[in-house]
Image (cartoon, rainbow, N blue to C red):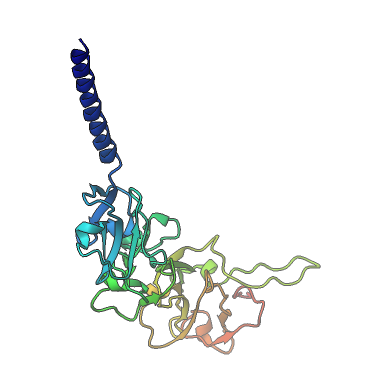
Length: 320
């Protein structure tokens, strides 16, 4: 009877040992180190957005570590034993020993630049999602802005994707988010034409006689009564407004410099700033008397004279 009981105890002890060994293996398996694994040569987010949609690997070696290493500017993440079997990870390299600990941007001072291309890249002031770490790490890297044309701007990191031929309107800087300048701006000008056959007094001048007791008003053309145009100006360029008076035909034109024609003669003035071309033109009137000049009545080929400041119109009258 005692012998039979001893055999049962021995069997029970063996079962307990097997259960303990199994539990130990399960605990060891559940505590295996896990690391993010990726290579920025295949996926740039390995460098710019670690921890988002990256694969995870389980380290097989005991006492392994997670690493983030950089070689020739490229970022790699994973288990130390797999990436560096000899256990040596050359700088720059970050090592840690808790699961998924290699999820941060490395190095922490990696330059961040706005990175985009096309029309959406012209103004990035309200687009923080475009400000990202540079995919290729290079100490002393710089951000750049390349203005291609009015509807296309390129931004990025110099050592990642700088265009081979960066023109003079290519800006470079070396601190986080520095390539945020707006590359196309707008300026507005008055746009109108005044000529003898199609007079436009509002284009010529807009001045009202002062009421009694008031100072004379400053003469200026108003965008309330005159059309306007818009200059689209690329960064690094200068555009403005113009006013041109053809002294022979007395045609007056105002407009934007981006659509200005060629004026070989006449009086041309240019300025910068919204609606800066609103200065009035001095009135020039024909001056004659039919008593001494028979052509005065017909109004052709008459001598002219610039009127005094404050003059608002020319006149003609006939006495019977």
